[in-house]
Length: 416
Image (cartoon, rainbow, N blue to C red; front, side, top):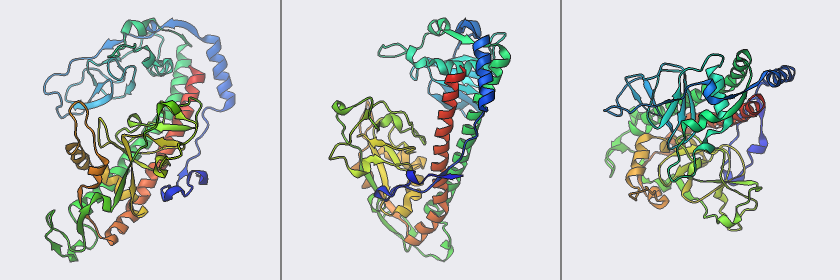
C-alpha cells in the first residue's frame, strides 16, 4: 500500500491518516493498443434498435412494498423488494422518468416498475453487458428533454447511432470494464459489513448499555430513563458541532475554478457524489474554516431528504448552505459521531423535527439542541479504539473506489 501524506494535512484538526491501494493497470498497454486497433478496424455503424429491444417496466401491485427477495427497480435504482420477479436475470434497467437515463445492471431476477425501461436480452450478435456500457458511454440523461418533468423517449434512444465491433470484441471490452465494477461492488460490500459491525457494537454499548464492565455499573434514573451512573443527560452539542454551509453567490461561479461547491445533491444516503455542478476560483474572505472540506468530513443534508449522512471523498470541496458538516467536540469521537447519525432511528428523529410541507427543512440549531445521553469518557474512548479503524477503512475504500471509477471511465471512453 502507498501512503498519501498530502491528503492528511492537519487542517482544523479534522483530517485523518489513511492509505490507498495501488490499482493494477488492466489491460497492459501492448494489449490495449492491439484491442483499440481491432475495435477501429472491425466496428460498424448501428442504431440502438439494431442491438436490443427496450421494454417498458410494470405497474407495482398492492401491497407496494412487500417483503421478499426480488429487487424492485425504479429510475432511482432499487426502491424495495418484492416476492415476484417480472424479469429474469441479467437485465439492464434504464431510468425513464425522474432520474432520466440512469443505468443499472441487475444480475438477479428483478421487478422494474413503470418509471423505468429494461433490456433483458440483446439481439443476435450483441452482448448484453457491452450494451450496458455502450449506453453509459452515450450519456442518456442528456436526451431527457427540457420540459418541467423530463422523460426519456424509447424512440429517441432507438434512433441513436453507435459504432460497435464484433461479438468477441464486445465480450472482451465488457470483461475489462466489468473487472473494475466488480472490485467496486466488493468494496461496497466491505463498507456495508464495516458499518453493520460498528452499528451492532454501538447498539449494544449505547442503546442496550451492554458496554465492557456494565455488570458492575449501577443504573440510575434520569430525564431519559435509566442510564449508567457515570453517564449524563445533555444535548447533541455537548459532543458534536453542527456547522452550516456558506451562502455562496452565483456571481462568483467560475467553470475553470479550483474549488467544487458541495450541495444537497452531493449528499446521498451513505455515499458522496464527487461531481459538482458549480466551481469557484477564489474562496470568499468570510468563508468559515469548516466550509473548506477534507476527506473524511461528515456531511448532513438539511433540505428535502433530510438526515442523509455521507463522508467527503476528495479535496478542494467547499460547503454550500443547506448542508451541515458534523465535527466532534473531541476528535476521538469522530467514529461515534458518524455511526450515531447513520442510525436509521436517529435519521427518523431528524425527520420528525424537520419543518415544511412541500419540502422538509432541518434546522442545525434544533439538531444540536436535541437531548442526548452522554456516555462517560472511558466508554467513549474504548468505542473509539474499536470503531475508528472501521471508520478510517471506510474512508480509505471510498478513496480507492473513486480511483477505480475514474480508471474505468477513462477506459470506457477509449474502448467504446
